[in-house]
Length: 252
Image (tube, rainbow, N blue to C red; front, side, top):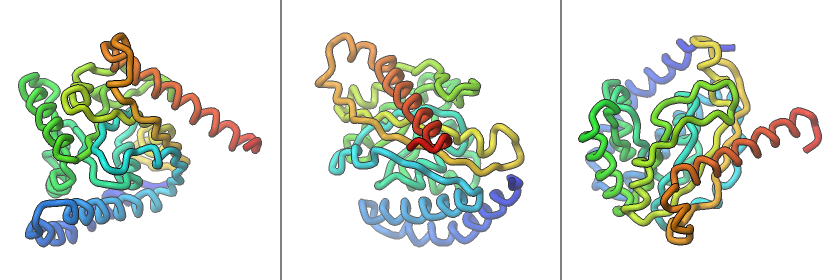
C-alpha cells in the first residue's frame, strides 16, 4: 500500500527533467521518428510508475491491432490509471481524446499534445464537434485515436457496468473509414479510486478485441454501432473476469 504522494513526486521529477527533453524534441522535424521517440519516453516513464505501484499487467490481443493503418480505439473507462496502462503498452503513437481540465496541468498538457491528444469541453457542443473533426483529420493522416464513449469514468461496483456510449464518438470511424478496435480493461480502479489517496497493488487485465470494419456490418449494426461496440466490450469484460477467476482458483 502506497501513498499517492510518492507517485506525484515521481511524476514531478519526470516533468522537471522531461520538459528539457521535450524542448529538444520539438526541434525535430514532425513525423514518425519524432512520434515514436515521444511514445518511448512517455511509455517508459509510465511503466516505471506502474512498477512503483506494483501493478502487474496481463495483456491479450495486441497482435489484433492493424500494423499499417490508423484505427479508433474504443474502451471502457473506470480509472485515471486507464490511460497510464494504455500508454505503457501501446505499440505506436496514439492520441487520446481527454477532458479539457487535463490541459490545465503544466507540462503534462505539452507531452499530451506531442502524443496527438485532443482536449474536449463537455459543456461546449460546438467545441466538441471541432475536436471530432480534428480527430478525423488525424486518423486520415495516419494517427490512431482512443476515446472513452461513456464520456466519464463509470463508478458502478461491477466491472460489467457500462454507461451510455455516445454515438458522436463513432463519427471518427464513420467519417474516416478506419476500423474500430474495442478495448476492455479491468481492475484499474483498485489501484487508486477505491481507497484514495492510498494506492494499492493490482493485476490489471487488458484485452484488445477483433477490429470492427464498418463496411462489413449490416445496415442495422452500422446504425447502432455505439450499442454494438458496447456489447462487444461487455463480452470482453466478462471474459477477463472469467480469466481472473480461473487464475485465482488455480484452474488455468
